[in-house]
Length: 363
Image (cartoon, rainbow, N blue to C red):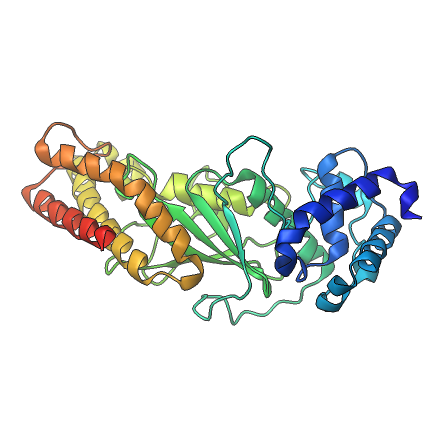
């Protein structure tokens, strides 16, 4: 009987209290896996498949309405997370992200960086891609989702879709001290059947009229060594045993959205010492920043409905600092944190862009 396992009884109590306000979300997930997530979070012991199944039945006996609502649940398979599999995982993490938010007592609620929505939008670049959905593949993706919850750095958000386990979208806000500061950039992601032997597929959603980075193509290609779309000496390649999606997203944020993107082009790093290269980089930065602000305006007004709150929240949070920086640049009291010529044309256009964004946010 479940009563013979005091940890399970305590787990049930905690689950019941925290799940009550989120019943609508929980009905779409397998109850056994949720319970497994909670027990694993204690780090004290593991659940065997038999215990998961028994616990699942015990909960359903007390909440028959969940059994009626959870038409997608498969209790007999809910215990696929075995002790050995969990112990062999890199971080001893559960396979699925929990739909139950938790906040430490007395701590302010952290802004969520992984957001789950019911349906993948029709505009997702990989919506038409099919998958086999074999268990090992789903198991690895489950670990990726857990890692996203734990390890995403500031300025990166991921949207998951309940109806498509293989599809994600990511919003990466341009870092400070770069031409891309405060702009939320959007990417669509797909885990192919060959994952993790093959890297994920990543598509850049271009909201600017012109290319703003050598590694981000208007057609959607993202050039980075981890994705196998860029090659170079000493670069990091995809490793099926070690590489993960968090590394891919961080590489886009830290290695593509950089202070001097002109030198991202293959072979251009060596050109830094050549005459004229520094000025070329500065001119590129001026164009990149104007295009980045165009991107900001368009995605703020026309971004996908499923993630518009995140997009607008990032812009409203980050714009005041960038606005103050722009004022200081135009006044000549400070220089940008990235190389520019501060040409007259750049200053005039930058002032106009600042006014457009101010008016947009005030509307």
